[in-house]
Amino acid sequence: MIITCPFATFEDLQESAYLMEYSIGVRPYILEWYNDVFLIEFNGIKPRRSTLDSSDGEVPGLTTRQLVEAKFRIKERKYSSQQLYENYIIPLENAGYIDKTDNEKDRRSYLFFMY
Image 1 (cartoon, one colour):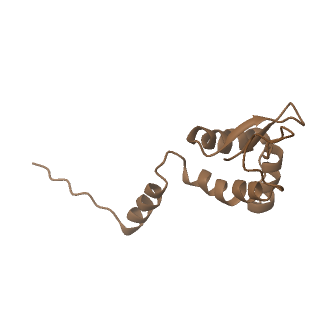
Image 2: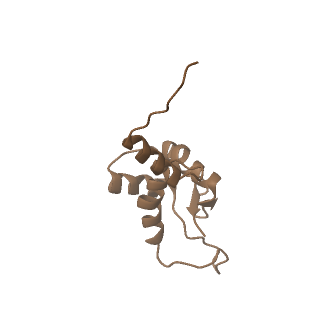
Image 3: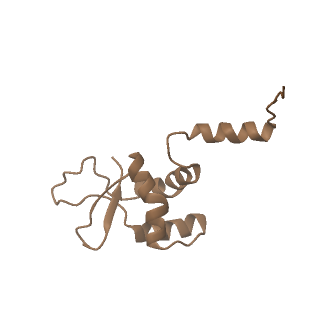
């Protein structure tokens, strides 16, 4: 009879606690980007509107180009718009953190926002 004894180090415990903190289905580095880049840029939009139904039909939001520039400015990492969209925005959309709408000023892009 072979007896198996699991062995874990303190570092393993720290890593598992870190991952469980973000066990909502979004990877920790994506939530870090959301908090450090997206929220800072989104909260900097002036004037903030409380609802999507504004009189001029404009929704406050950020384009991928603005988010790429913010990521480079804050994190000093350069991404293309497509890379940023696939790696960060889509997972956050799927988890319900952010939403998108058509950009009225540029029909080729979307505006990303949070409620």
